Image (cartoon, rainbow, N blue to C red; front, side, top):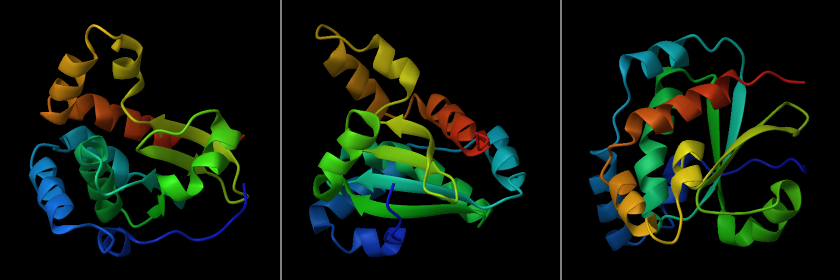
Length: 162
């Protein structure tokens, strides 16, 4: 994976419309980190880089990202770099086979992908089908899956280099 530095979250938000910013703010209030998430974030002892491919208009990203952002605030060793998914879609598809908003890649110092989070937590992705997708997406966006999102992010930050 070619190496270049992404945007900070603040720089990423500069691309947002006022409507997107309002939606992001609403979703931030629904996604809450637990004591376990705080504990796990504090215990990260080596630098971790997570490349976040997203778009500010995405409500699913706005639901999941506050937990990851909180982890990175708790421990600056958890480094987040933001990129436009649309501008990097082909690269992401070539790298991991699909690109959904958000796509979060844990990479090592050489840029190798160690793990990923794609659109929803894996347990939610496994449940989604044509008959229940709208219901599950609505539930996801309501914040009731915050702990599941957090657990996937904990797994992602704990991934070991090969």
